[in-house]
Image 1: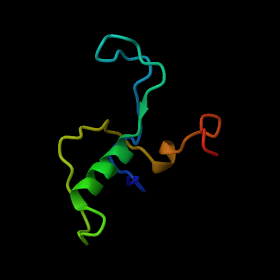
Image 2: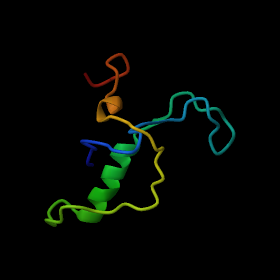
Image 3: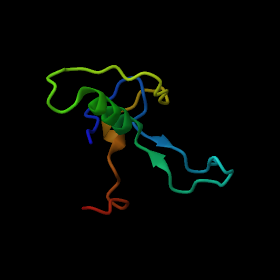
Length: 82
């Protein structure tokens, strides 16, 4: 799985807490790592050893904004792996 190392024109995280899911239940902890998910999709299209430098990912529809990759870092109080 690849990860985003930078962002431009989109917010790296999509905070879905407080919004209803497909069944109408309010989500309490879902924060989607949109930038990382797009990077992962690009890695699937490129492959690890293809030598291609770039992939175009269409249809992702991320939340537009001036985000910073630093915004995608997990706060230490929520990080289960440190």
